[in-house]
Image 1 (cartoon, rainbow, N blue to C red):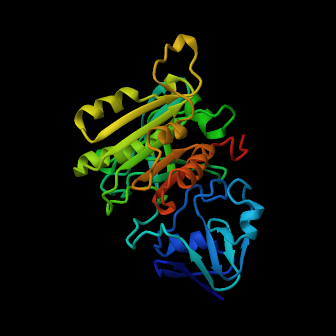
Image 2 (image 1 turned 180 degrees about the vertical axis):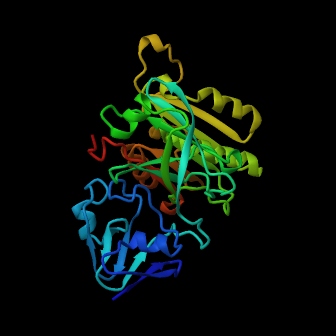
Amino acid sequence: MTFQISIQPSGRTFTAEPGETMLAAGIRQGIGLPYGCKDGACGSCKCRKLEGTVVHGAHQSKALSADEETSGYVLTCCGVAQSDVVLESRQVTEAGAFPIRKMPARVSSLERKSHDVMIVRLQLPANDPFNYRPGQYVEFLLRDGSRRSYSMANAPHNGPGLELHVRHMPGGKFTDHVFGTMKEKEIQRIEGPFGSFFLREDSAKPIVMLASGTGFAPIKALIEHMQFQGITRRATLYWGGRRPEDLYMDEWVRAKLLEMPHLDYVPVVSDALPQDQWTGRTGFVHRAVIEDLPDLSGYQVYACGAPIVVDSARNDYCELAGLAEEEFFADAFTTEADKAIA
């Protein structure tokens, strides 16, 4: 028996098979629900249940707490409908999502940008275009059946290959390979595109782009896309790292400032050492935004990085700075350490 899932206020509907998560059912039928990790770790798919019964699979409490679940919130990525369900989600996108595909990808180059960040460029099959929106991600399909997710750091017009930014997590089965034994011309299998993190072009509001660490990757794709499309909305990038070297493409951003007069840049370092000779902003990057822009009621925010940064930003911006919840777009990525994978 299938169940009908209705999304308010958009009125979009789809059906879910028995045992199928609501997110998987929506993706299968081209319904653009918001999501990030797809495994109950980030909370990007959290929304309010207005009607119906939902049973959750395994998930992390930071993504959905017991109190939130009692209050009627659900995670669509691990929530299975037990009846017809009505959800409230204001970030449902229009129909026309690109199809999700599996394909081989050849490693075309490896470029180390810092002691723990590698730029991995992938060559895709010729004469078989891979369509995606700037800000989306792909998953590497590992031989043991596990997956690793990385955002495209290049806009599609800068293809046809993909640029990915990989941070080394010591002990991580995939990142140890990237930083140890991965070779050019090696073949990997990927699947995508996934994610609901992309620029909403039907708005003229100024933009805050918030990135921590390699959360800069999808933000870079958004910047390239804005330049290519001639989008001149005022945008300010706040990029944070522990040390200056964590801002591993700082020169790239500064070059873009000369080409894009509507783009501003605020680098923020939280734990600079004396030898870094850092003279710029310090502290937590998400707090720097409120220090500069205490009223965000007229803005859109695009945030990507560690879940603690994204969650703190969402809470502070909406509760303290007047940002409308539906104008906060996030891709809270989870690391191999977050998923307790060795």
